[in-house]
Image (cartoon, rainbow, N blue to C red; front, side, top):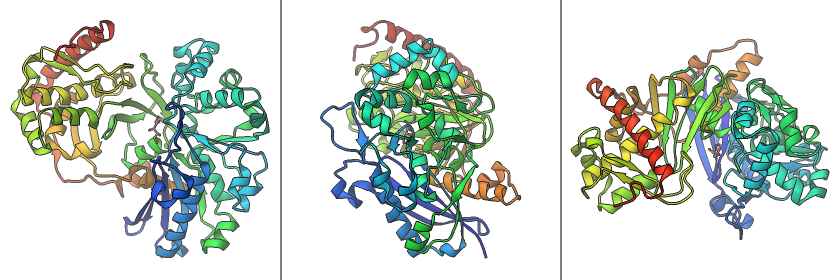
Length: 520
Ligand code: XUL
């Protein structure tokens, strides 16, 4: 009888389930649940609660446990769960859930009784700049904090959020016996008791020593009083946290499947995209553009924009996030009244290198490099032709992705591209040329959920004494969208090396001089 593994991904707006059959080597089930539509009574919009302060972005933790129950009802009805061997999951990173020390409400399915705080700050919350500065100051500055925990302080990271809660609601903070991240909160719900935090998601908190994978006493002390006693233990991502609790089994008729520690959505996507060796990179071209890849040892982003997280393999991953992704591409497309076909045609009409023209597409405040105000820049881009502007925005994005991932110290050999714009071969050709690496399109919308299912299989086999390798586990399920690989054009390698230097010069000039390149 072939075994099944369930992977779940609790993202900002939805919960997705993927079931894999490891004998047939197939994904046999997929379902997604949209939070706003499924739970209108909880009052969320795009998965978060309305707020009078735009910097405060919270969600009710019961949204996630209710979604879990709704999803497992569907899985129990639609899948032969007698074959279900193990479950794991992934969740949005950084968000935190505040609970009592007593874990018995989890066992009784009374998740609301576990809480000491009704709402959870999410990764979109930007209200803790002051706490970030204080934590960095206490630990010797942003670089010192990055060297210790993998990232300088970011408002969405859990540590600064905990500090704010401890300051604003000291009584509720004192009453809190366990602080979970979203992944460990949902894992707790499944095992019926407080679950540990896996090291990959733990690295998004500004509280874990990135190399040792243990809580940093200095970071705990700099964040909030008595914090060490309130955090669950850290464990490897392959840790089996328990089995599905009796509450789920009796209520939904599910088997005592192993529950493998949950992790963050980015680490899980690393597995769901099959990125398990240095030199493999994932580039996601979505609302934001993101580049990430495995790292065999820790290297810290000198300019403080990148993060080092743990990888579920036990190694690490680097990640750099750009805010001006699809939004910037759409801005240029709309400016010239193009559709995507015409956009691709225009891209191919301008020569590679665009005659040295550079755009810095900061149509929204940018994360990498940090740019606080809307300020697109144009250098030597004097015409108003669609071709040169389309090439300029795409080349700028690829050059930024390439340059701002150099800190990972790994030369990309192979890039797996996902997200809406990865369907466009003309864009992927520019990516291949700029990186001087082969690019393959991976149409994996559910990379985090698939990664969770693969992790459940991998950990279950290890627990059974029959371990499988990461490349075998991912290779069985992660397949390119098309047979075509896009190869770099060798004659363009030198040109784009020069363009990297030019892009760096222009970026420096723009950051130092608010007037540089502003004419359009
Ligand atoms: C990563 C981050 C987001 C969330 C989204 O640092 O904040 O990617 O994990 O779910």
